[in-house]
Length: 230
Image (cartoon, rainbow, N blue to C red; front, side, top):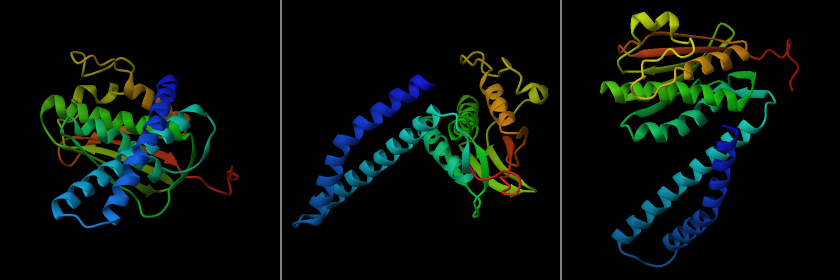
């Protein structure tokens, strides 16, 4: 992961240089001179696509930077979720799965390691997307954040096939997988559980209202009277 993070960060920085040329020229072309509506529309499409690439590269760099450090910091869980969902959403869209976020209006502050928490959320989103794609049932994953009784709650809900009843009690055990034929190792959810436990949190799975799976992660909210601000 550290090596891949370094590689991704380097590629993102290299992309940014020619990308700035594309953005700058597209903006100048739109701002100056007369042109027909079709040309203006095409330039607008170029600008929109370039801005999207810029946001993706920035998110990749932030993710790679977060993976380099094990320092804990004060984090807004909703911001961590939005960045992770953005990264996971690109891969999921290739499988025809839409990743949506529904975040709390108020900050949900926790003391944690940004890269580790992003990795946990990305893994949950990818698991849900792969289950949908393999079963050919469902089309979306929703990641929510809420506050609940002193916990920052993250829900990853999908409308896919759900988790078989016989796997519920073992879903976080290493090497237990429903994707053996697809090359699954059964380590993804075990890693997620370890990350959550390292943050003094808890995680479990339920049935989603849509019939799919609902993974619930809860992390203790930061309390200034108990933990001085880092």
